[in-house]
Amino acid sequence: MKPFAFFKKHSKPAGKYWQLSDTLLNEIAGTRLPFTSRNYYSFCDKYLDEDAHEALFLDGEEKYFREIAADYDILKYLYYLRAQYRETPVFCDIGCGIGNMVLYSGKMLFRSFGYEINTKLKPVHQKAKVEVLYGDILETDLSRLKDVDVIYLYRPINDAALMNRLLALLHRHSKPDVTVLYNYPHTRAIKGYQTVLLGQHDDMIALVKQPTR
Image 1: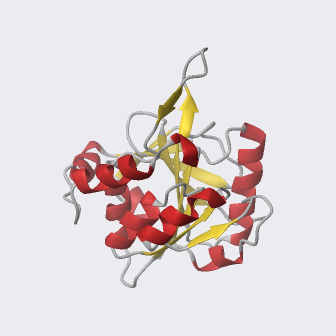
Image 2: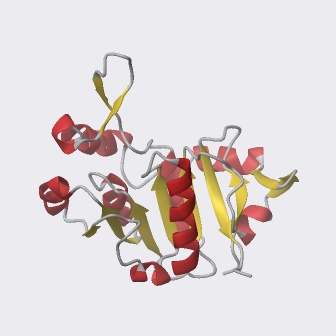
């Protein structure tokens, strides 16, 4: 399948970026997933805790606040992508945390796995019965990416330079027609990729891999 041909068909150029049309955005927003938001958020709420280090410092007093690492609506983009493949696509979550995206992408009939550095989350992954490879994503073996159709990133590294290094690694190890969904990007201009804006804001983009020259 040609990379993002289905997006470009419904899109219009916005400078050097692509923007989804309002019609397609409304279609995706109205998607009914094969599970409820209550199912999804109850799983996240059950396993996201400070002991698992799934938290952010949000104020000067360094008080912990829990966060859900992927909004329910993001799964609708993933479900839309799923419908574009005739055969079962492979999904990978880089920095998968508790494995919520791995678990629920599997419910959308992806073959799914994730990478995670935090081995304390193994009991959660075992209970959820999700496949996770452990280690530092910048140092681990990425050979599995050669078969992946969709990669998901929720800012696994909070450092722009290291994120650029990671995206270059993904570019090198992934196949030509891979789709990269990138939540909360540090920049839209990413070397080796063309950007598709998934909505009016910059917190969710899709990356189109460009050939290595």
